[in-house]
Image (tube, rainbow, N blue to C red; front, side):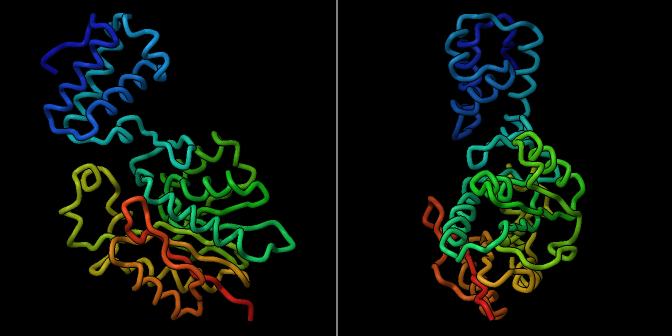
Length: 294
């Protein structure tokens, strides 16, 4: 940075960082500055206010300047901090995991609605999260369903390591297991709920994504093949065979994909009791199918 933060007060440093971010056309300049300074100093918003007049130490200034440099280079705040909140839960990230996004909470909402409307089994509910990444969807569901247990799968060992760490930190390890495999290939049947946020970006569209996604999210978790539906063609038949009677499959989809994914589910015998659920932008984001009893 051209202006050193060493010796500045916390409040002056926050304003200076905000200006730098605004000059770089970062839309969330003020928020990003506050989050990064708070994380760098291990202070929440109340702490930042209470200590606004305190001067930064040389070590603190150096740490914050590194954060600012990385943000100005286009690295997302969540990547800089290797952490992101999802469904109110603090999650650790790794380079092998997607950054959980608010859109994906739509899948959690629809899954809970469907599961709570289905007949309750006379046993503990079971959940599978296919391509679990950081464990975000599975752990959010387990936090809402204290009687349930779940399994997360991922082809990436590094992603599974992050998911296990998150489960432990949230006190959910006793109800969450993680398995390395391609989609659901290592799982047995009888699940009451299967969820997934699979890769759904068309291969040729990846280059046009925002730099924060294109340059920092793992491409394997983004690339859905030529039409964006390759993962669903594998995942949906597997899931349909693994669901218990009255079981639910809920998946995230991209813009304009909900109808195609519904048809793929219908082809496996799943029915649609509810329409796709829209995210906050009004885009159909979550699709669910129900497996009827024989």
